[in-house]
Amino acid sequence: MKASIFCYSLKGKETARKIADLITKEYGAEVECFAPERLAEGGFGPIPKPSGDFYGEHFRNKEMYISVGSVGIAVRHIAPYVRSKVTDPAVIVIDELGKHVIPVLSGHIGGANRISEKLAEALGGEAVITTATDINGKFAVDEWAARNGMAISSMKTAKDFAAAILERDLPLRSDLPIKGKLPAGTIAGEEGELGVYITWTKVSPFEKTLRLIPKCLYLGIGCRKGIEAEAVRQAVYKVAEDNRIDLRAVKGIASIDIKKDEEGLLIFAKEMGIVPEFFTADELQAVEGDFTPSEFVKGVTGVDNVCERSALKNAEKLIVKKTALNGVTVSVAVTDMEVSFE
Image 1 (cartoon, rainbow, N blue to C red):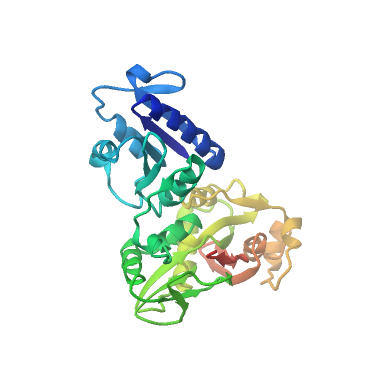
Image 2: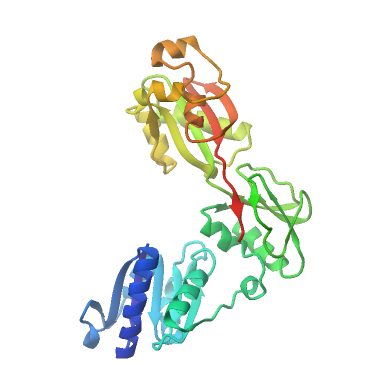
């Protein structure tokens, strides 16, 4: 995580130093601190005059933007650059004495609310939280999803959910086991007008379904030598379409080690943003399960099935068995994973 801290007075510098130490220790953040040119020393870079795009550069390229001073100063600096709650950084304003810690932007998805509470506790101040779900003690679905690394199917539906949960309890369904109690404002439910579904699928059980997509799937891929990336892409997409799988749930891609230099497979994995894993024939043969054997594959690779065994190497349950298309075989497995709202 990268963070920028801006301050405008000597007392503000003292508070900024404390904040920098705190977020470095707590989040392992790479922190840059800035002050007016007359105060720019001792680890503080200068804030230029005129500032031009100075604040915009930090707003666009950092995950955390902290301003030590008045809310008005911060708002004027960031106003031209505010775009979306999905992409804007966590913006936090703290008065120069550290009495009030105010999350201004990305309170949920960017974690500004949660970070503000930690900073307030450490500074001996108060976090000024204004988001409705938080102050009413209801399930902040977008914050929880972001904190647990889950994709959100629709930000519009997430907004509708956040508004509706303030008025009534909403149904929640999960394909993953739930540890502990359901969050405040939800009830266990399989159907209804509006609900949240924790799933790796594209299934929508509610009239309006907010899907939260966990990283819990592993793709096992086998392929012929010299396979092109497009063939791998088509095979995986076909498996996903036929089984109503949301590919945002894919956590890992695996194959046998003799495929570690297959350019087509490597290109596809890079497109998915995943570093593939490759296992030896002995490692794959040791995987337990009911597999679809092939004597031909065993003669070439030394193991009777590559894709199913590869998918299960880091997972527990095969949900899509071997599927072949144009020289590519694909299987999908899901890992044991619990969700907790406590």
